[in-house]
Image (tube, rainbow, N blue to C red; front, side, top):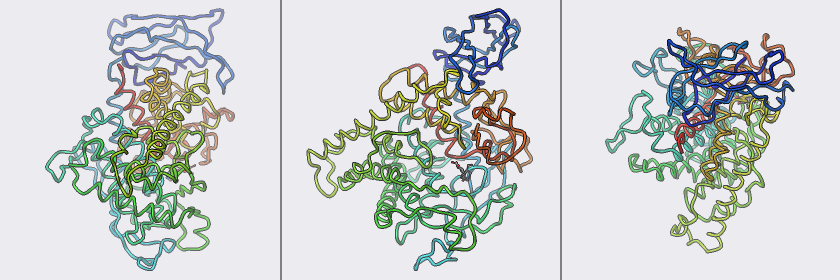
Length: 583
Ligand code: 9MR
């Protein structure tokens, strides 16, 4: 079929479509035509299909139609004689603004503890569920001052995914990505109207919708810390996964479970960097007291982690020792040196206290990897790449900065920036020739939530672009956005509600159990994953094609769930591409 970004293309951007199965007897370079979607169906551009390199998975050459040379705004489709026509698409200076708003709005739809009301909720209005005002301390989390069975409050926040639980580790990587978007494109992201209930600050100003949404989750997170010792509960959850029912129907007991070092460090990093970014973007003044609270919480969390440096969340072990058994998502990370690096970096940046410098140096990785919930060192480097060593000079928390320490800060910044660009180059060098995408360049790209790898690669590439202004980084990032929106062998645009062929049956309890046919829009599904852990029948027969292991089925949770940490890098990537269209 003809695989292309089903939304469209920026006027000045690379515009390609891939033909991945074809029969052209005797014709070496068949023609393609770009047709205007109007009553005359004018041919506005034509060209020849060229062979791609060998596709890693099919081991065949695909054909590519490149119409980048055509730059006139409008509605179009491609026609390839003998092969049919493509889905319609637009060429425009801001092709992805509606998509971006939808991807942001998806967080509103996934809010816990509140009703989704008219007019904000469109077709997807629903009653409030999970007030989380009477959450039990699970025995695994009991302390002298907060024994098992104690009730606490932690309302708000976003549901993690298709399930109704709230997990600190995953909420944290999500917040980093979303806060990085605010930091990198503050003006652009803040002017977007997403039609959510407005929030007026204590100083009487209307907060941008985007910031309002972020605060909804941040304020939930703040309540997940034990105020007595600073430790952070790993998650707020029911004992098991809820059946497929709407939030208001779920009356299961909710628990906070064991404090873990990963959750506590992740929490510290989010509190600290959020405070820093609120100051840097000028929003701190509109939110009196908030950044002070965030910093107090960050410091307390850090101190708890110093005292408990390696408490790993191990759900099997937990279930041997405590009742009730907890069987929801574990986000159990066994290697947490990267969480130490991230937290130390964010504490250093936000406090400008040289006391954190040794930890940053100690945990600095020798190279970086694409971020994921369990792999966060690159996020530490992303933040370090944004600092200016001169900002540290005049700060005298504890002791004045020594010259050698300031040199260290400068070195850390340069090293982080260099490592990000080297990761970006490495990604480009490993692209899949068959679809001309960074995504799929390595077999390991296709795991649970593979679409988030495509998006996170895009985050890194766009960060490298911001650091260097090298066009190749942006072009490669855009290739991954094209992948997610249809330039892939499944033929799907992987975002609900966007594109001509997009998932209709995500593993998302709200979408499954509401009365609305269409799924909640703006959600990125997990994507191809040869692990197929859901065991659902009906996957495409190509057993050996990791890139084709996708099924639009609401039981197929290993490929068709949605998650806040998958939407976040898509949000970053889309915002970054859209904000830099003509630069
Ligand atoms: O994204 C997580 C993935 O990396 C893991 O392999 C998988 C199995 O542990 O869990 C995924 O996260 C799920 C979480 O545990 C519970 N909420 C839904 C998440 C997305 O599927």
